[in-house]
Image (cartoon, rainbow, N blue to C red; front, side, top):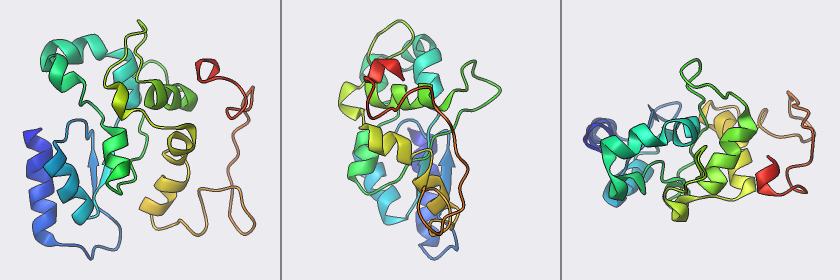
Length: 171
């Protein structure tokens, strides 16, 4: 918590006006007042959702139950106007599949099926935007990348099933 607070204070002191928004990589624990300060300073949180899925036991041991429920507060960030970006933290994590991160962002489940901070789960549209639209916007390319739309350049990922049709457990 303190490291993020320190970064937010330093960035906030400089004020807005950077060509691109500042980012906090490995942003994982933020208090409500920190979230408000991040929104005011236009800071982009960059969490690593594979850690919730793969390393929750380590995090729970280090943080305790109460703080674990606040780990990667996606819903709070989005509700405050922040647009978090997915990051895999490769090669540290085992599962690099983007849809596995989408699943974790939505369900807040780890590999053992435990749920952490259920109220911080987000919907499919938001989880997909963390991989597409929001990273493009954070790089200043929101009008050219991040969507499948006329006039946009596109990289296309082919999935085995339509994520809007199959259940979340099929992601």
